[in-house]
Length: 400
Ligand code: KIV
Ligand code: ZN
Image (cartoon, rainbow, N blue to C red; front, side, top):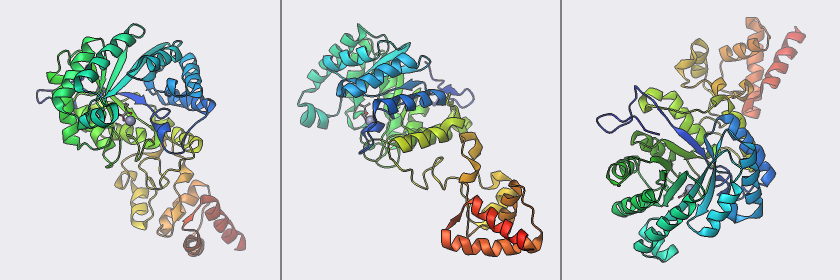
C-alpha cells in the first residue's frame, strides 16, 4: 500500500490514506500483568474484533503455550475476512509454530522480530550487530518459504542507531520482508523523533520504497497515540494497537483513542480507517471484563466520564447545541445513553431534559421540588442514575 505524501514529505490531507489497524490485544495486550485469557475467551474476542473491522489480528504467540497455539489455529480457521498474524522470534522453532498455527487462515502473515538496539544486543542477546543482521536475514528467508507476507519488527528501533536500523531493514527487505515495523518498545520516543525515523528509513533504506511501514508504540510517557499519528504523517500505513490500550507496563497505543483521533480530525491527519466505530464500546467492555482490567473513569472515549458533563453551564450549552462541549457523538461509538449520568453540578434544565427523554413532564413547581431532592441524592451518591431520578420524579408527581 502506498501513502499519499506531498512535496513536504507529509501525509496529504486532501486525499486521505487508508490506515490498516493491526490489533495485538490478544498478544501484546495479554502481556499486561494478570490479563491472561483462556483460548475460548480469545476466540470470542477475536470474533468481536472482526466485527469491529480490524484489518489484522495477532491472536497470540503460538510457540508460547499449547493454549495460545490452539487459539491462533482456531481463529485462523474461523475468521476468513481478517488477516491473521503469526508471531515469532527470529528462530526456526517459533517460525514453524507460527506457520503451522496460521496454516488454515485465508489471509495470513508471519510477524518476525529481533532487537536492533545496542543495549538489547549487548545485555540480552549478547550478539554483535553483524550476527543479529545475519540472523534476521536468514530467518526472513526461512519464513518466506512458507508465507508470502512477512512483517519484520526491529524491536526497540526508536532507541537504536539509525544507520543500524537502516542496515537491518535493507537486509530483511532483500530477503522478502514486505512490512517493516519500527517499534517504540519502551515508549521513549518523542513524536518528532519517531516520525523522523520513519521518514529517514523510508527514504534511505535500499528497497525502502517497495514495502509498507507499521508503527508499534508503547505508552510509558503517555505518547503512544501521538507517536502513532506522527508515524502516519511520516508515511506509516499500519498502526498496531490494543483495545483499551492494555499491554506491558503502561500499555500500547489505544485502539479507540487512535481511531477516534483519525475519525474526528480526518482532514488534519489526512487518514482514515475501516473501523466500525459503533462497535468500539462493546469491544472495550468485552476486553475489560475478560481480562479483569478496569477502565479508568477519565479514559478517553470509553471511560465512564468521557462524555459526562457535570457542570450546569456545560449541560445547558449541550442542550442548546451538543457541539458547544462535545467533539464526538457518543452514539457513534455505541456508548449507551444511560452511561451519561447526572451529578450535583447538573442544572434544572438538564434534569428536565433527561426526564423528558423518559416521557416524564414536570411543571415548574414540580421541577423545583425534584431538583432539591436530586441535589440531596447527588450529595449522597455523587452521580444519580436515571432510575433514581425517575423515582424521585414519580414520588413528587404522585404526592400532588
Ligand atoms: O514492543 C515491541 O517491540 C513489540 C514487538 C516485538 C512487535 O511488541
Ligand atoms: Zn509491544
